[in-house]
Length: 121
Image (cartoon, rainbow, N blue to C red; front, side, top):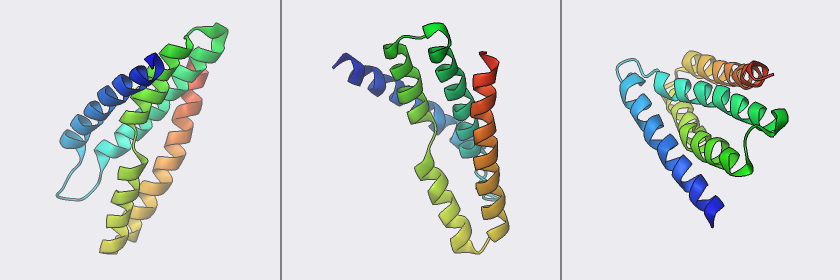
């Protein structure tokens, strides 16, 4: 039960923070979802750091990893919003934004995870 509460608490904090970033960074005028992009990249970097610390000399406990990686990062990053925003790009015929956003999210997201793990080595 304690582990479920840790994930629940971490996810709630991550979700609220993601909402605030999206509220202030997503631009309805040009449709570019900078907030979602920033949350996903920052979350990728954070999960790299968190899991890197968890592996390195057992720096983080299992409960801390659940709170931070599964809970916080799970609530903070959002594949469902990313998928919906790409649906909007495709529906409006904006194939350039779709391609740039999708490719940049994957490449920069992967690099952020690797960089986060590299930082703690």
